[in-house]
Amino acid sequence: MIKNFLQRGLPALALAALPLLATAPAAHAATAQAAVPAALGVAGAPGVRAPLPLFEAIDRIPVADEQREGYKRDLYKHWNRGLDLGDGCDTRREVILSEALEAPQVTAGCKLSGGVWLSPYDDVTMTDAAGIDVDHFVPLAEVHDSGGFAWDAARREAYANDQASPDTLIAVTAKSNRSKADKDPAQWLPPAAGYHCQYAATWTATKLRWSLAADDAERQALLGVAEDCPNTTVVYEPAA
Image (cartoon, rainbow, N blue to C red; front, side, top):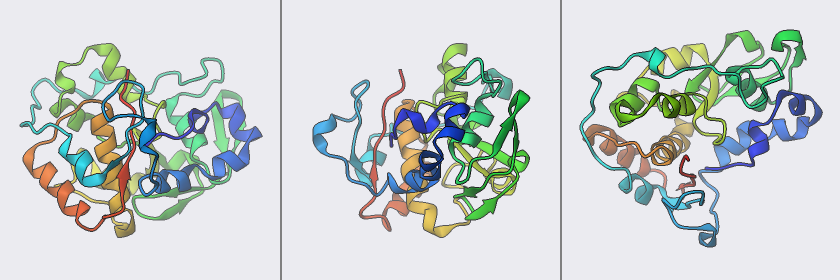
């Protein structure tokens, strides 16, 4: 599910291009339903978008037992300095800026005031940037379980700060993020039932983007959600 790179753009653009920001969360929710012409490419080819029905996309995730051994959260360095090394905003704040429905004011040191956001997990409107969590859609521990244990430090940092895809990171309420923790879809689905199809599609896209596996319970949970999502498609771009 790839949106224009500018939707993860620089905070300076966030203030100059409010109409673009205003569409970010809506687009986040719409891309799973939007059909993309097959001519764009073939699933799995580097740098090529891959439009797939949700069931087919789930089938492309390899199935493997989880491996938690050796996991430490600090192995996945976050947050780094973001896309613009000179703007004073780290990745977290750049994501918050990019997903604003109404852009906040940005002052020295990337301090944010004002602004409006929508948390898709629980359909809650947020007006205080300080209280927003930026969630790794596939949690760091789950990434490690699913293949990240074999990654080097650079790839772990790349995942933990991935703004090249709009799906890896998402701004949500702290309450919903704490509830989710490191659970996969077999253990947790968002309180907002209307977001379940999108959630399954984004989870699947992120696993495919980063060549991660799923255990059997996770796969069955995703397939169960997909039963109610006949028109949902998955678009992803493999990570470099």
